[in-house]
Length: 198
Image 1: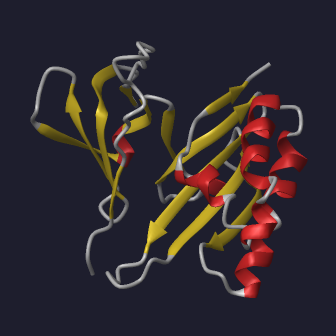
Image 2 (image 1 turned 60 degrees about the vertical axis):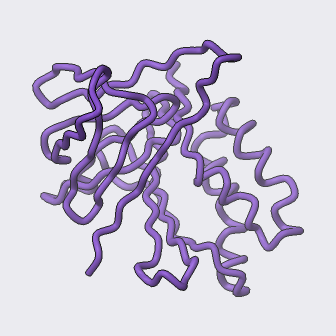
C-alpha cells in the first residue's frame, strides 16, 4: 500500500501582504520548534509530520506521539486520542471554542486514476469525546450530495456563536446546492484555523 502524503504549501504570504505568520511545532515537553511556513507534509500511515527548520533546507520529521500541535501559517494540525482511545491521530483544527473543537481529516484514493477524496469531521469536547461526526466525499452520487447537504447545519448547531466560523462556512454554502453541494468542500480543502475562545 502506498503511503499517503498530504503536502500543504502556503502561498498566502507574498511581497504585497507583509502579514507574518508564526509557524512552529509545540512538542509534548512544551518546547517550540520554529519551522518554515511554506513546507509541511503529513504521512498519515506512518503518523509522522515532515518539516524544515526556519533557516534550513533539510527535511526533518516528528512522530504524532511527540507533539501536541503544529501551527503553520493560518493552519493548526493537532494530535488527539478520540473517545479515550489508545490510538493517536492527527487532524486539522478548523475551529476552537471554550468548550469544543471542530477537527478534520481527509484522504485521497490510492488509485491514481481516481479523484475520490474522503473527508471526516468531528466535533469534540475538550477531553476528546466525540459529540458529532460526519463522513462525506466529493462524488456526485445522490447520497453523497445529500450527506454534504447536512454539513452546514451540523456545524451551525455547535458553533452558532462563532461568527467568524459561520461567516466563513456560509460563504461556501450559499450556492452549494446548485453545484451538488460541492462548493462546501472548499471550506475543508483550505483548513483555516478559526479561534472562537471567549
